[in-house]
Length: 251
Image (tube, rainbow, N blue to C red):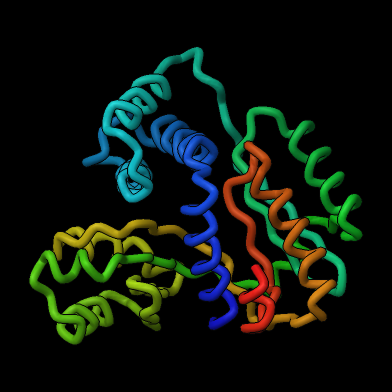
């Protein structure tokens, strides 16, 4: 999972440097919207909403913005968003999996297709690349959060392993926990019991195998990924590009 973890680190640093707060907030608001429509506006009885609120706090979204998003989502005239996914190949055989929340599927698929075409990629049929990824729960925890709670890393790891943690990585002041998809809910509950709030918790698609193209090819793939991430309808972009240390140093 090293390549995936490195890319997560890059995204975290890049996001901080670029200060793309408005786009991040927009994506969180959409998640709140669909969570409220699915399970109501009470986070105590709506796990998906509770998680969305937690992620909003981790992104430093103001409380007023969060409450306003919950209220608007409950309005019968609020936009209805659909969850749709798209799969395709970037140049040099790099697999790309795109998750979207949209109120206009025709617009979204047209945009996704155009990004693939513009960057020498190809949109495939749904399911064509599913064998290349496995869905796992991924939790990003600031290490200072554990310190604030007086939790030693070893003791904390024993607790989360019992809740289903399969792997833990520590890098750049963060601990990243991985669980099987079916253990995502139990891990959310375990962290709540321990009083530990993740900066971000979500189901991600982890590549089973990775591809390491040349530097120029990797740069082309990165441009495609960035094009997706700039799109307001796109929630997440997953891929199996493995970046070398040299590539990372140039970014």
